[in-house]
Image (cartoon, rainbow, N blue to C red):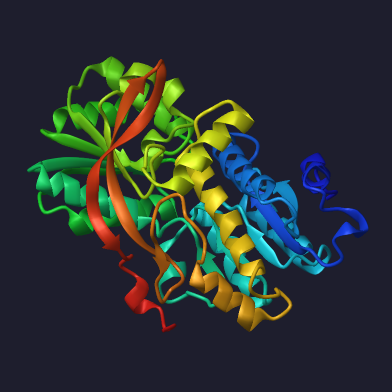
Amino acid sequence: MKKTAATAACALAFGLGGAALAEPVKVGMITTLSGDGAGIGVEVRDGFMLALKLAEGNEVEVLVEDDGRRPDLAVQIADRMIQSEDVDILTGILWSNLAMAVVPGAVAQGTFYLSPNAGPSALAGRQCNENYFNVAFQTDMLAEAAGAYATEEGYEKVFLLAPKYPAGVDTMNGFKSFYKGELAGELYTKLGQTDYAVEIAQIKASGADAVFFFLPGGMGIAFVKQYAQSEVGIELLGPGWSFSQEILPAMGDAALGAKNTSQWSPDLDNAANMRFVAAFQAEYGRLPSAFASQGYDTANLILSATESASVEDPAAFRAALKAADFASVRGDFRFGNNNHPIQDMYLREVVKEGGQFTNKVIRVVLEDHQDAYAAECPMQ
């Protein structure tokens, strides 16, 4: 497969091709840019590239390719990038099933992998690796915060809904590990499903006092709109992905008032985040999502590491990544023993301000929170 047009454009736009930079750090971004979920991939890519643009004179070259949300294609691209393109770092994968297909083989070949999104439990626990860093979260974390909130609010019977794939399973487990009430029901749907009439009927008949759901991308848009039309009237809760910025306009009024949990929000009051949100809006004409913030932080982590170590010295570069010596848009965070973030988790509410649907922080739900699988990771 040939390089995409985006590949050449990235190198040209940031002055990274040619003889000006003798030995740039070469990053291979494999992300979803077509089909359902493409909007998420665009967010991660745009946030990543914005960070590079703001850091003028950096020595980072980026190759961008579309995985089509196919594990087999993602593996093919990763193998070629490592073996033929000589990339130093891989990044970009959104989906946990694709991450499980790509990451173990990539890090086994000595390539660094920095995740801007997918955080399956296996890679945080027993399959952790010194060359694998998750810059966003371990998947359970957002759901754990939602479970803690549901318990604090006194919900007694919550209905759970998620697609049947690793991130869906992790999300369900995360919620249940922090929720102390009863379950009114627990359903796994098909990945890519868009008709939820049967599931909504079961929710309505379940006696639930709240619904916790994780349905990313177009799945979530379809569910929330159908749920509102059904007039069930039971409160919706979710991880931040269920009410992410890139899908809120399509959900419209149906999402207003919904509570969700995330490690980031566009209104977080710190200098790095305010700069990011303003620059993203100026560059792309839209509010950034959490996915864009994760791409932005991933690029800035790479840039911070290149300032103190050469990627040609893996041990030194690894230590520079672990130090996370950059201003994150989420505020303070640090990597745990398993190279996953230890960070605050926020409760947010969907609001409409100035004609735009967005999220606003209500409070911190879990402070300085580490994922549940770090104890299983043999790294210290």
